[in-house]
Amino acid sequence: MLDDLDRILLGEPVVSPSSDFASRVMRAVRRSCVQFAPLPFPWQRFVAGLVGGLVCTFVTATRLMSGSRLNHTAFDATAWKDTLSRGLDPGLLGMTVALVMSLLVVRLSVMYASR
Image (cartoon, rainbow, N blue to C red):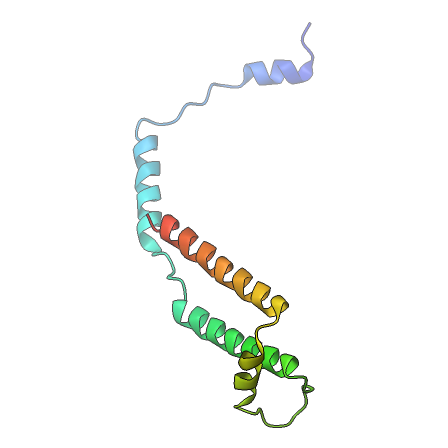
């Protein structure tokens, strides 16, 4: 027992692609792949941001470890020597190790992704 929808669908003609349909689709795919070149990664901006971040981290860490407050006074260039002569704070050492390990992971992933 067929209802109205089944009867309508059974009465539809079978649709099949034309003989050159696959070749036209493949031509369009190849044409669209050639049009857009991949964007390069902005390594110069990345390195500039990384260096700036490391400088800010170093300045802040030396200021905090030297016991001075972060205010709008000029940075004392000899403060880092005093800090290093007293020894590194374990927290700062941990952050440094974590940063180096993170950079190593990024370097390895970029190296394997470029293969």
